[in-house]
Structure formats: C-alpha cells, structure tokens
Image (cartoon, rainbow, N blue to C red; front, top):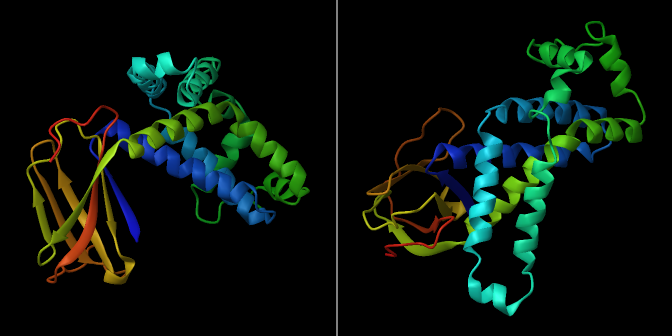
Length: 255
C-alpha cells in the first residue's frame, strides 16, 4: 500500500511540508558521505524558508494548548499525568524557550547565507566558487555532524511539536473501505470538521489519486502513475482503496 495525504487547510499544508523537510534532514545528516551533508544543508535552508511565516509558532502553540485541553477529564482523574499530556506540555515548553525569530541565527551567519545563495546557482557550490565550503565538506564526519546539529538545534522544537501534532491528527481518524468506479469516487458525507484526508491504495494499481475536497463534497479521481507527463490519463477500471478522515477534534457527522 502507498499512502497519499491531502491537507484541507493552509496550516496543515505547512505542517506536512515541514515534517517532510525535517525527516529528509534527519535521513541525510546521519550518512557519512559529504554529499549527504550537502543535501542536509540544503534541506536546512528549505526548513528555514518554509517556516519563516510569522504566525507559524503561534499556530503550533495554540494547537498544542487546544490538544491539552481536549484530554478528557476522565483521563485526568484516572492518571496524575497521561504520557500524551506530558508530551504536549514538554513540546510547548521547548517551543516557548526559543526566543529568537525562527532561523534568525542562520540568517546572521554570513558564511551560511553565502552558501545558501550559491546553492541557487546551477553548479554554484563548485570548489573554485566556494573553496571554504569545499573545505567544510572535507572535514571529518563527526565535525560536520556537530556543525549541522548546532545549526538545526533551535529549529528542532518546531519540528518536534509538528511531529507530535500530526501524530495526534493521524490517530484521531475514521477509516472507510471505498471503491472508485471507473477511477472516480465521490462522497458528500464527510465529517464537517475534517482537517486532512488520507488515501491508501495498492501500489500494484500504478495509480495516483487527484483529490478535490471541502467540508461539503469530496471527489477523488485516479490517474495513471507516469513519469512522462505531469498528469497521467484517468483510470477506467474500478480501484479499491481506503479513505481516512483525520481531525484534531472529535469527528462530528460520522458517515
């Protein structure tokens, strides 16, 4: 099965993009090859740009607080402190301790900003263009990891908080077994407070879902997976799939 997630708001889109970037950074930073660290640094710059929106930190803190308040009174009475409540509290504390603007320490590093600018130019980080960067890539693995860890450190609370919130979002869901007849599926009975849709489809079908959705209507159109054009032809066979509706809130109007 392959999973496709479709956010229904700009806030969730930003969360998913940043989760993707932090995952990519973590996957490349642990690899000893210098080119993996070149990719990790480029991803670090993407994280900085993607999270530059001033309201992002406030959005995260507000949702963390909402989730803390939604932990039921019964759970609070049964336990002195639930593990999830602890996680939400710690994520809030860690994020509030970051006083500076997101990525400000990176923007104030002239060397890093010089590398960032050269990465926008095709071949711009060649050794003769950036000898100091070439030198850094040849440093021992441990030194490069330490540098990357230092540069990402103040951004990590944001990534951790987003990861926690998306874990809650994905868990609080309803799953439906569906069939797209001749590649088309429509639903007018989705919950009114859904924040994200997830489609799970067998990879053997070689298809991609194109999702159009709002709180009143959802249309999923399956097309052929192809690398020859931006958009494949519509599938004309029946496609079984699983549709998952995810929400930060208790799901109302369950189908």
